[in-house]
Length: 251
Image (cartoon, rainbow, N blue to C red):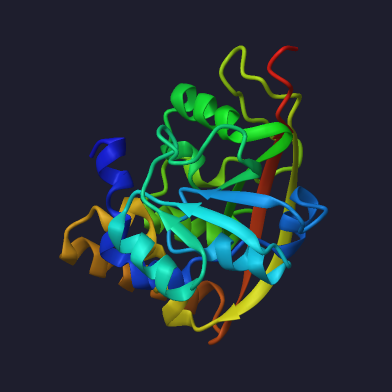
């Protein structure tokens, strides 16, 4: 299946995505935005996991842009008062230099990097920050790594940085300073069935047939029973953050 087809698969599981996917580790947002007194664009916002996390950190001025109607509907229902706009990273429906920060969570790998970088630079004010995040069950834990195999996560798009110091290469000439990265970790309790169901919110599983999806869930539940043996499960999560500052255009 092509990357655009995979990218369009999430709307069919919007409610489950919102219920089961991890929000970013709060410390990652505090590292990205030292002050809440900024206007933030949540780009490729999905169901609003980051939008709500920003609000919890005291950021009052957030605009969310999401192309999928079903995902955006969940976002609008669960983040009342937030401007939830239809749009893409390659065509952002905002004026030039209108936001102080752009945050894209578990989304950058779906963007066209050349066009998206140009659009992000257009809407960011000079000195504004671009923050790219990925939040995921931590594959450095052996049983989580086994679940990734069951999930058929044969690429690293959604876990681009597990170790501190990972890099993101923006297109040549992009008006951004050097990027910095950090990985934040925490643990949370989840029902074993929910851990298994979470795998079904990833495109590698969403794009399978119904029978194949059921088999993935069955195998995941078996891994959890064999490797962890408890219910609920203490799940290790990580948020990988990469950020860079937008330079003035005349530099």
